[in-house]
Image 1 (tube, helix red, strand yellow):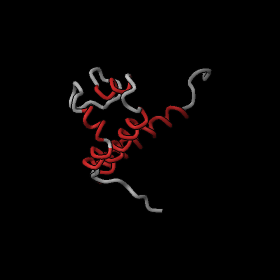
Image 2 (cartoon, rainbow, N blue to C red):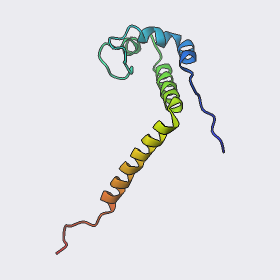
Image 3 (cartoon, helix red, strand yellow):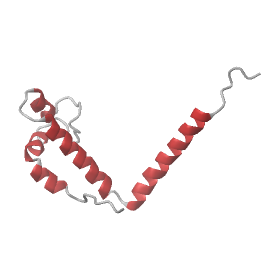
Image 4 (cartoon, rainbow, N blue to C red):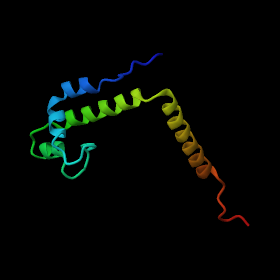
Length: 103
């Protein structure tokens, strides 16, 4: 089955989540991820109940999805290949025979 993906929706996300976009402009850092950074205006608004945490989580989730879907095919293949190698090494270590008790 084919999958529908959001592609290049950054400006639309800023419109839908206008309050978060406005708050993020007040953050201390330009590359703030609104997670746990000091000086984050979005986190400050959530701590004072001015802002809904679920709304912020949804915004971050859609932004991450947009970044992933906008990634070039070569970039995606490279990331997937690196992840596959990591999984392979992890499985080899997990299933390697123990050297304890051999002897």
